[in-house]
Image (tube, rainbow, N blue to C red; front, side, top):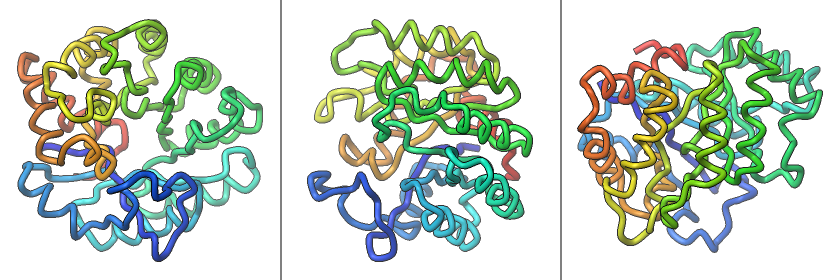
Amino acid sequence: MIIDTHQHFWNLDLLEYSWLVPEFGPLYRSFGPQELAPQLKSAGVAKTVLVQAANSYDDTNYMLRKSSEFDWIAGVVGWVPLWNPREAAPMLDRYKKHPKFCGMRHLIHEEQNSRWLQQDLVIESLKLLAERGLSFDAVPVLPEHLANVPVIAEKVPDLKIVIDHLSKPPIKAREWGAWAELMKECAQYPNIYGKVSGLNTAADWENWSAADLKPYIDFVVEHFGADRLMFGSDWPVAILAGDYQKVKGETEKAIAHLSTAEQEAIWSKTAISFYSLKV
Protein backbone atom coordinates (compact mmCIF):
# COMPACT_ATOMS: atom_id res chain seq x y z
CA MET A 1 0.00 0.00 0.00
CA ILE A 2 1.15 3.53 -0.81
CA ILE A 3 -0.19 6.44 1.22
CA ASP A 4 0.33 10.05 0.18
CA THR A 5 0.54 11.86 3.52
CA HIS A 6 0.52 15.38 2.15
CA GLN A 7 -1.92 16.72 -0.43
CA HIS A 8 -4.17 19.76 -0.55
CA PHE A 9 -7.43 20.96 -2.03
CA TRP A 10 -8.54 24.55 -2.32
CA ASN A 11 -11.67 26.11 -3.69
CA LEU A 12 -11.39 29.79 -4.58
CA ASP A 13 -15.15 30.05 -5.03
CA LEU A 14 -15.78 29.09 -1.40
CA LEU A 15 -12.78 30.10 0.66
CA GLU A 16 -10.00 32.65 1.00
CA TYR A 17 -6.36 31.61 1.19
CA SER A 18 -4.17 34.46 2.40
CA TRP A 19 -1.05 33.15 0.71
CA LEU A 20 -2.60 32.24 -2.64
CA VAL A 21 -2.17 35.15 -5.03
CA PRO A 22 -2.07 35.43 -8.85
CA GLU A 23 1.73 35.47 -8.78
CA PHE A 24 1.58 31.74 -8.01
CA GLY A 25 0.61 31.18 -11.62
CA PRO A 26 -0.72 27.64 -12.20
CA LEU A 27 -1.64 27.27 -8.52
CA TYR A 28 -4.03 30.21 -8.65
CA ARG A 29 -7.17 28.19 -9.33
CA SER A 30 -9.29 25.62 -7.54
CA PHE A 31 -8.03 22.06 -7.09
CA GLY A 32 -10.33 19.25 -5.96
CA PRO A 33 -10.61 15.49 -5.55
CA GLN A 34 -12.02 14.80 -9.00
CA GLU A 35 -8.77 16.10 -10.51
CA LEU A 36 -6.51 14.18 -8.14
CA ALA A 37 -8.30 10.80 -8.19
CA PRO A 38 -7.12 9.61 -11.64
CA GLN A 39 -3.56 10.68 -10.85
CA LEU A 40 -3.59 8.60 -7.66
CA LYS A 41 -4.83 5.59 -9.60
CA SER A 42 -2.16 6.02 -12.27
CA ALA A 43 0.59 6.32 -9.63
CA GLY A 44 -0.67 3.35 -7.61
CA VAL A 45 -1.46 5.43 -4.53
CA ALA A 46 -4.24 3.93 -2.42
CA LYS A 47 -4.90 6.55 0.28
CA THR A 48 -4.06 10.15 1.10
CA VAL A 49 -3.90 12.53 4.04
CA LEU A 50 -5.53 15.87 3.24
CA VAL A 51 -3.68 18.81 4.84
CA GLN A 52 -4.97 22.31 5.62
CA ALA A 53 -4.24 25.16 3.25
CA ALA A 54 -5.67 28.02 5.33
CA ASN A 55 -5.76 28.96 9.01
CA SER A 56 -9.53 28.77 9.19
CA TYR A 57 -12.40 26.61 10.37
CA ASP A 58 -13.97 26.93 6.92
CA ASP A 59 -11.00 25.15 5.35
CA THR A 60 -11.12 22.36 7.95
CA ASN A 61 -14.86 21.91 7.52
CA TYR A 62 -14.44 21.81 3.73
CA MET A 63 -11.75 19.12 4.00
CA LEU A 64 -13.82 16.99 6.36
CA ARG A 65 -16.76 17.15 3.96
CA LYS A 66 -14.56 15.98 1.11
CA SER A 67 -13.11 13.19 3.23
CA SER A 68 -16.63 11.91 3.82
CA GLU A 69 -17.30 11.90 0.08
CA PHE A 70 -14.10 10.12 -1.02
CA ASP A 71 -12.98 6.90 0.66
CA TRP A 72 -9.40 7.28 -0.49
CA ILE A 73 -8.96 10.28 1.83
CA ALA A 74 -7.85 8.42 4.95
CA GLY A 75 -7.09 11.38 7.19
CA VAL A 76 -7.49 15.14 7.55
CA VAL A 77 -4.99 17.51 9.14
CA GLY A 78 -7.08 20.55 10.04
CA TRP A 79 -6.70 23.74 12.04
CA VAL A 80 -7.61 25.30 15.38
CA PRO A 81 -6.40 28.61 16.90
CA LEU A 82 -3.33 27.55 18.84
CA TRP A 83 -2.99 31.00 20.39
CA ASN A 84 -6.35 30.50 22.13
CA PRO A 85 -6.41 27.18 24.05
CA ARG A 86 -9.79 28.03 25.59
CA GLU A 87 -11.32 28.08 22.12
CA ALA A 88 -9.10 25.33 20.72
CA ALA A 89 -10.10 22.71 23.31
CA PRO A 90 -13.82 22.42 22.44
CA MET A 91 -13.07 22.65 18.72
CA LEU A 92 -10.61 19.78 18.98
CA ASP A 93 -13.24 17.75 20.82
CA ARG A 94 -15.75 18.54 18.10
CA TYR A 95 -13.42 17.69 15.24
CA LYS A 96 -12.14 14.54 16.92
CA LYS A 97 -15.64 13.08 16.61
CA HIS A 98 -15.05 12.89 12.87
CA PRO A 99 -13.35 9.52 12.16
CA LYS A 100 -10.86 11.05 9.72
CA PHE A 101 -9.68 14.06 11.73
CA CYS A 102 -6.17 13.08 12.79
CA GLY A 103 -4.24 16.24 13.60
CA MET A 104 -3.74 19.93 12.91
CA ARG A 105 -1.39 22.42 11.35
CA HIS A 106 -0.84 26.17 11.44
CA LEU A 107 0.98 28.12 8.72
CA ILE A 108 3.76 29.12 11.09
CA HIS A 109 5.97 30.39 8.25
CA GLU A 110 3.48 33.22 7.67
CA GLU A 111 3.86 34.52 11.23
CA GLN A 112 6.19 37.50 11.66
CA ASN A 113 7.47 36.14 14.96
CA SER A 114 9.85 33.30 14.09
CA ARG A 115 9.42 31.94 17.64
CA TRP A 116 5.63 31.94 17.39
CA LEU A 117 5.40 28.25 18.27
CA GLN A 118 7.22 28.78 21.55
CA GLN A 119 4.60 31.10 23.06
CA ASP A 120 3.09 29.82 26.33
CA LEU A 121 -0.49 29.81 25.00
CA VAL A 122 0.57 27.90 21.88
CA ILE A 123 2.40 25.33 24.00
CA GLU A 124 -0.75 24.97 26.11
CA SER A 125 -2.76 24.24 22.97
CA LEU A 126 -0.20 21.75 21.71
CA LYS A 127 -0.61 19.90 25.01
CA LEU A 128 -4.34 19.72 24.25
CA LEU A 129 -3.48 17.94 21.00
CA ALA A 130 -1.27 15.45 22.79
CA GLU A 131 -3.93 14.75 25.43
CA ARG A 132 -6.38 13.84 22.65
CA GLY A 133 -3.97 11.63 20.75
CA LEU A 134 -3.79 14.07 17.86
CA SER A 135 -0.65 15.01 15.96
CA PHE A 136 0.90 18.28 14.82
CA ASP A 137 2.25 19.06 11.36
CA ALA A 138 5.04 21.63 11.59
CA VAL A 139 5.72 23.51 8.36
CA PRO A 140 9.09 25.21 8.88
CA VAL A 141 10.53 26.85 5.79
CA LEU A 142 13.58 28.65 7.21
CA PRO A 143 16.14 27.47 9.80
CA GLU A 144 14.67 29.87 12.37
CA HIS A 145 11.32 28.09 11.98
CA LEU A 146 12.90 24.65 12.24
CA ALA A 147 14.67 25.66 15.45
CA ASN A 148 11.27 25.72 17.18
CA VAL A 149 10.58 22.05 16.58
CA PRO A 150 12.97 20.48 19.12
CA VAL A 151 11.86 23.09 21.66
CA ILE A 152 8.20 22.10 21.43
CA ALA A 153 9.16 18.42 21.28
CA GLU A 154 10.85 18.80 24.65
CA LYS A 155 8.07 20.87 26.18
CA VAL A 156 5.33 18.52 24.91
CA PRO A 157 7.03 15.10 24.81
CA ASP A 158 3.77 13.20 24.26
CA LEU A 159 2.96 15.16 21.09
CA LYS A 160 3.70 13.48 17.78
CA ILE A 161 5.23 16.09 15.45
CA VAL A 162 6.02 15.74 11.77
CA ILE A 163 8.26 18.14 9.84
CA ASP A 164 6.51 18.86 6.55
CA HIS A 165 8.71 18.71 3.44
CA LEU A 166 11.73 17.95 5.63
CA SER A 167 11.83 21.71 6.18
CA LYS A 168 12.78 22.34 2.54
CA PRO A 169 16.45 21.29 2.50
CA PRO A 170 18.77 23.44 0.34
CA ILE A 171 18.79 20.91 -2.51
CA LYS A 172 19.13 23.38 -5.38
CA ALA A 173 22.22 24.95 -3.81
CA ARG A 174 23.53 21.47 -2.89
CA GLU A 175 24.23 22.71 0.61
CA TRP A 176 23.70 21.29 4.12
CA GLY A 177 24.60 23.91 6.73
CA ALA A 178 22.05 24.94 9.33
CA TRP A 179 19.39 22.65 7.88
CA ALA A 180 21.49 19.55 8.49
CA GLU A 181 22.50 20.55 12.02
CA LEU A 182 18.92 21.34 13.01
CA MET A 183 17.59 18.13 11.50
CA LYS A 184 20.18 16.18 13.47
CA GLU A 185 18.94 17.89 16.61
CA CYS A 186 15.32 17.12 15.75
CA ALA A 187 16.20 13.47 15.17
CA GLN A 188 17.26 13.16 18.82
CA TYR A 189 13.60 13.43 19.85
CA PRO A 190 11.62 10.22 19.26
CA ASN A 191 8.35 12.17 18.89
CA ILE A 192 9.63 14.07 15.82
CA TYR A 193 9.03 12.58 12.37
CA GLY A 194 9.65 13.80 8.82
CA LYS A 195 7.74 13.97 5.54
CA VAL A 196 9.60 13.10 2.38
CA SER A 197 7.47 15.59 0.51
CA GLY A 198 7.79 18.82 -1.43
CA LEU A 199 11.43 18.10 -2.23
CA ASN A 200 10.98 18.70 -5.95
CA THR A 201 10.19 22.37 -5.33
CA ALA A 202 13.32 22.63 -3.16
CA ALA A 203 15.40 21.42 -6.11
CA ASP A 204 15.92 22.92 -9.56
CA TRP A 205 12.33 23.40 -10.69
CA GLU A 206 13.03 22.71 -14.36
CA ASN A 207 15.63 19.98 -14.10
CA TRP A 208 15.49 17.68 -11.10
CA SER A 209 15.57 13.94 -10.58
CA ALA A 210 15.94 11.24 -7.96
CA ALA A 211 19.68 11.91 -7.92
CA ASP A 212 19.03 15.38 -6.47
CA LEU A 213 16.74 14.08 -3.74
CA LYS A 214 18.64 10.95 -2.73
CA PRO A 215 21.47 12.52 -0.63
CA TYR A 216 18.96 14.43 1.50
CA ILE A 217 16.64 11.44 1.88
CA ASP A 218 19.62 9.26 2.82
CA PHE A 219 20.60 11.85 5.43
CA VAL A 220 17.22 11.73 7.19
CA VAL A 221 17.04 7.94 6.92
CA GLU A 222 20.42 7.78 8.67
CA HIS A 223 19.40 10.13 11.47
CA PHE A 224 15.67 9.49 11.92
CA GLY A 225 15.32 5.97 10.61
CA ALA A 226 12.74 5.03 7.99
CA ASP A 227 10.19 4.24 10.70
CA ARG A 228 9.92 7.99 11.36
CA LEU A 229 9.64 9.02 7.71
CA MET A 230 6.65 9.10 5.35
CA PHE A 231 5.98 9.91 1.72
CA GLY A 232 3.95 12.92 0.59
CA SER A 233 3.37 14.44 -2.84
CA ASP A 234 2.57 18.03 -1.82
CA TRP A 235 0.07 18.10 -4.69
CA PRO A 236 -0.93 20.50 -6.19
CA VAL A 237 2.04 22.64 -5.11
CA ALA A 238 4.20 19.93 -6.69
CA ILE A 239 3.03 20.87 -10.18
CA LEU A 240 5.33 23.89 -10.03
CA ALA A 241 8.17 21.44 -10.64
CA GLY A 242 6.69 18.43 -12.41
CA ASP A 243 3.56 16.33 -12.11
CA TYR A 244 2.20 13.78 -9.66
CA GLN A 245 3.62 10.80 -11.52
CA LYS A 246 7.12 12.29 -11.59
CA VAL A 247 7.10 13.09 -7.88
CA LYS A 248 6.06 9.56 -6.99
CA GLY A 249 8.34 7.94 -9.55
CA GLU A 250 11.47 9.88 -8.65
CA THR A 251 10.87 9.29 -4.95
CA GLU A 252 10.58 5.59 -5.75
CA LYS A 253 13.96 5.68 -7.48
CA ALA A 254 15.54 7.69 -4.66
CA ILE A 255 14.64 5.07 -2.03
CA ALA A 256 15.03 1.95 -4.20
CA HIS A 257 18.33 1.05 -2.49
CA LEU A 258 16.70 0.87 0.95
CA SER A 259 15.54 -2.43 2.42
CA THR A 260 12.02 -3.67 1.78
CA ALA A 261 11.08 -2.90 5.39
CA GLU A 262 12.43 0.66 5.12
CA GLN A 263 10.56 1.29 1.89
CA GLU A 264 7.34 -0.06 3.37
CA ALA A 265 7.74 2.27 6.33
CA ILE A 266 8.14 5.33 4.10
CA TRP A 267 5.31 4.35 1.75
CA SER A 268 2.69 3.51 4.37
CA LYS A 269 3.54 2.01 7.74
CA THR A 270 4.88 5.18 9.37
CA ALA A 271 1.83 7.12 8.18
CA ILE A 272 -0.62 4.55 9.54
CA SER A 273 1.06 4.60 12.94
CA PHE A 274 1.67 8.36 13.15
CA TYR A 275 -1.82 9.44 12.08
CA SER A 276 -3.66 6.38 13.48
CA LEU A 277 -5.18 5.83 10.07
CA LYS A 278 -7.90 3.24 9.56
CA VAL A 279 -6.97 1.72 6.20
